[in-house]
Length: 535
Ligand code: 0X9
Ligand code: ZN
Image (cartoon, rainbow, N blue to C red; front, side, top):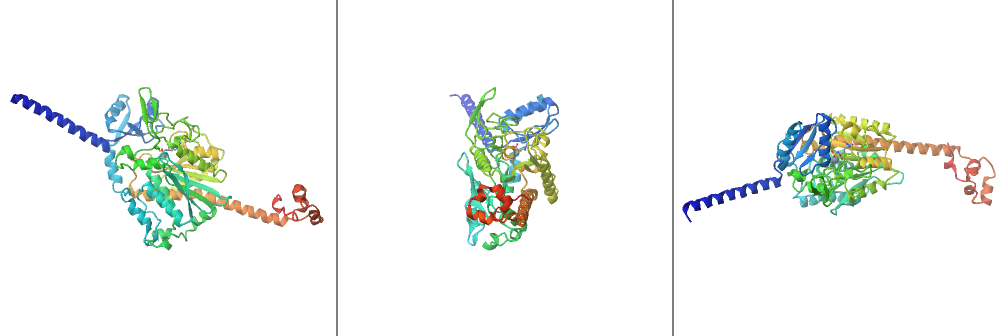
């Protein structure tokens, strides 16, 4: 072999090696989730809006993930685009004359910046478990302002129920597709006549602030304000909630359920690689792959948007039949074990369920039914709206956070198949609300809340929620008062009109039952029918 041939081969080898190294580096950084961008697009014509809506309903989440659904001309739409597609997407926008900007240059960097210093307790679960059961007894208060794995949250709920049986009971709503138990707590002594309030969070996996807020509510219900201020770890103090009359009032008068993570499979998936947008920004459940032909190719993807899988106008609007879409509604209503189990749980409370609140993020909205069409309401809309307005006002009083309230299509966008609409229509719940927490709609990084905003978000939301709890509590109390007043009046009015009552009853022991209406009129006292007298 000549020297020049040798040099030539060496050069070729070097080129091949460089290409391989470059490819490894790129693949590795793609795998880590580098280069994800968030585009803010402004559809300025009706045609552009329709095109965006079509894209929203058909887009493959892996390529373009809509953080907001397009709904009106001149309303911004935020779309997270995967690194392999940013160039192509930009060309598409330019070709169709869209006004746009790149709102986040590299989402992974932002995730590291915003959430990198928030403890997410992935490696120290063991430490945490120990802390839950430390030397001085059960320490059930969860430190807030941090995120926890589902296994820590589940253990926490279990320990609360075991150690504080007078206050809380563990409930199992159902089992997820990956076999996790959907757990929650039931607060307050249950009696069949008490009204029920249900609060949930985490139906959408990436909405961590909602899960944090529901966990904060649990902490609040278990501990009174003074013990929250205490730094002491003392069994008596930590596990008592004496002294908070407001919460005591709720527990005495209503039954409150809190289910902090409705979609634990999805939530755990978002935690698998917390700075990789591909994982952290996952929204759906983790149901097995389903496929559909989208006109160009057959695409197969995992997961169902559980908030499109409820049996309320299933698949009609703002939902997709493509499994790779962010808003894939699933093969049929309640096809998913999570939504099916949850609907059965809610249905089991029918007649007693006065309020149902589901926590989402983000946009700072207090939403009520119905979501599928503008100006479409349940008959009790005035009351629903009155309480929502009051809640938003109360929430804002704490830190000045501005919330809007209204039905979905009037203030954000239309969709069907959601939990609150199903609950409102099927279970006739008086107060059925979706709350979209901080930050506001216009924020660029809505799912990635600053650490210092987590506790204030939860606190102000609680202030809003107490308006609903107060309504339910007060209405129940006044109906109780009315009832006891009526029974007092009935007792007072109760007498026998005729003198032979005792004799008739003795000679015919069933007479009170057989001739009930006559006996109410003539022998109410003797027959013990005072409670049946109309007042
Ligand atoms: O789209 C949803 O399922 C919810 N929004 S989220 O950004 N958290 O995904 C609820 C939307 C609220 N209701 C209506 N838009 N009608
Ligand atoms: Zn959501």
